[in-house]
Amino acid sequence: MKKKEINGLSQSILESYSSQLLEVSQNIDQDVQQAADLIINSSGKVVISGLGKSGLIGQKIVATLCSTGTQSVYMHAAEAIHGDLGIYNPGDPTILISKSGNTEELVRLIPILKEFKSPLIAIVGNVDSFIAKNADIVLNGTVEKEIDPLGVVPTTSSLVALAIGDALASVLMAQRGFDKRDFARNHPGGELGKQLALKVESVMHPLNEVAQIDENDSISSCASKMTNMPLGAALHLEKDILKGIVTEGDLRKSIASTNDLSNSILNFVNCDPISINPSISILDAMKLMEDRHSQISCLPVIDSEGKCIGLVTLHDLYQTKLV
Picture 1: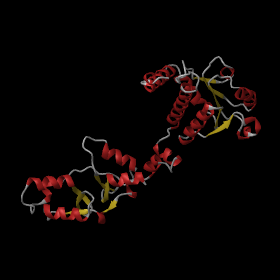
Picture 2 (picture 1 turned 180 degrees about the vertical axis):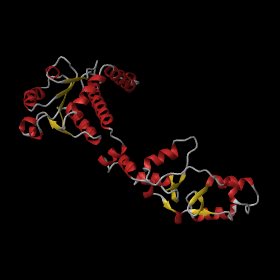
Picture 3 (picture 1 turned 180 degrees about the horizontal axis):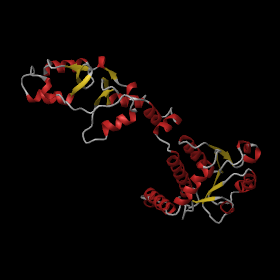
Picture 4 (picture 1 turned 60 degrees about the horizontal axis):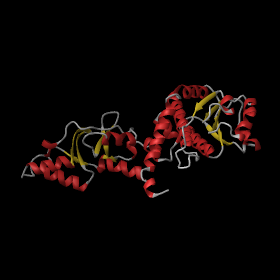
């Protein structure tokens, strides 16, 4: 293929992906819902089987289902009749993935799975195939064409099968009421799981590490305290009750507005600052600080009794994210 023929090829490939996925999406919603209902109403685990690229897609769908609250296992289609059928319990729903819908190894399994009374869900690219005709629910993954230059490599068909699996997992999440806390329990070692599981109280600075000012503090003394405890803010407290906060931005404004640094800093205190509860996850804390017109770099931490117990900075959250 000449270079001029390669230019724009990747764009056209992705555009083809997009258009074919959109076409598949038009008529699959009810079928995915039925498949989700079947799985929800089953007490067993989901078994997914495939061969070749379809098998790899099946393994990824298993991983997604497991991490989102649906017990699942992968069974290699060729190994099934050599002992792997031992993973079954009667009634375990099974998802068979095959572009042709006639994969020999899967076809041979169907009579056995029916003996197990396993409901069959087929993700296939041929709704007139043997597997489709013998499945309880068919998820139609038919594609117009594969997007590789030869038109034979399982590209679009694999992507569509994967997308259908993700759609099914998402519907199951919604039906189960699966939330961020559930995800954190299933995924404690990952970055997102850590962000969901860790709370503000685990990364905040206690009051003895935070600069504190009172009514006697000048602009100069406030600057000195913030230099000694460089967290980007100073708190104005009365018996652990937050009265206000001075940030580095407020301090710069105070210095720029006067030639007399002995003036009181209280004129520049924000008396209505945004604060955060110590039990909030660090992910939610980051969203609170970042998702606004003017980003917040630090937040006072207020407990359930209304007392200020510390300060958390955006830098702290980023550092935790990187550990």
